[in-house]
Image 1 (cartoon, rainbow, N blue to C red):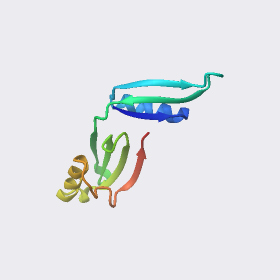
Image 2: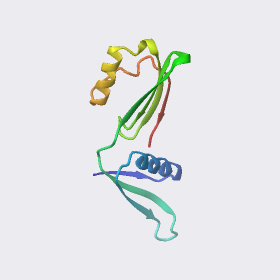
Image 3: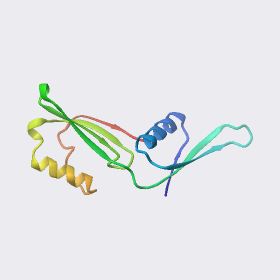
Image 4: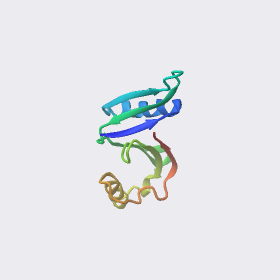
Length: 118
């Protein structure tokens, strides 16, 4: 079990959405100030194993491949684009290294990299 703590409501909402999306079993504990009932923090106890996914969507008209990566590095989500001609055996090897938890260079030279996470 691992513990995560959030004390800012937008962060709490984002984390809970990510945990639900990843189907992560969790225990949630709300900590409030005993004097005024104000939220201090929310503590989450979660299993350390997460479901990960990688989705590749070809964009034929643009000759691009759009990657949507979820939970490969913890609860982080990434999306990025790669020119179709760059998706070769070497790039797929880099993807395999990343999925295996090894150092990788898959993100070198990608376009429109966006990160989301807790």
